[in-house]
Image (cartoon, rainbow, N blue to C red):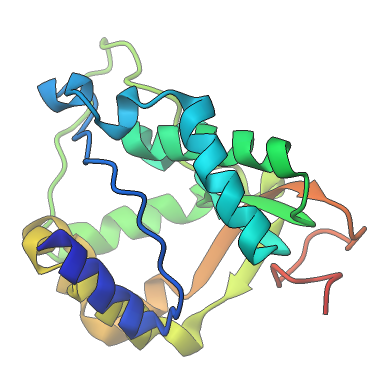
Length: 210
């Protein structure tokens, strides 16, 4: 079911090449599925990096995008994807540019306000509790790349909507296409590898390559 949803999501985005390596979902951090035999989280990084490096060698991408070291919000599979992608990049040395996804902290307050207006409530953090992990996102001045994606807002919305089995957890869908495009119309990244010398900040992942 999830594979069919992924294929539908790629179709909405007009992604023409999808490679699936077959690792089972590890679940959220702390779930028993983290340690299940064959889960992505338990896969040795060098083993999976070799498989990804083979794909990099085949496709010869100019740009590679992955999660940051915390997997954006601490999901085990996202963290593992970061580790494996960076290891594969080191093995191949071929991409001209490598980016980590992020969000500007300046926009987090507005984002939270919009979600509350849509009825999405988050529990108030315990001020005495230790931090659950690194804070999400980065200060604006640490973000290298700001890409205007408003023209593709409806496609992005449809791609999310294709994941029907996770619909109740995808609170972005409650916004509707217009509000979603308005709020999610800029994607932000940190450039961590570059061979082009393109000046920063930039508004194009392919700056220096076109």
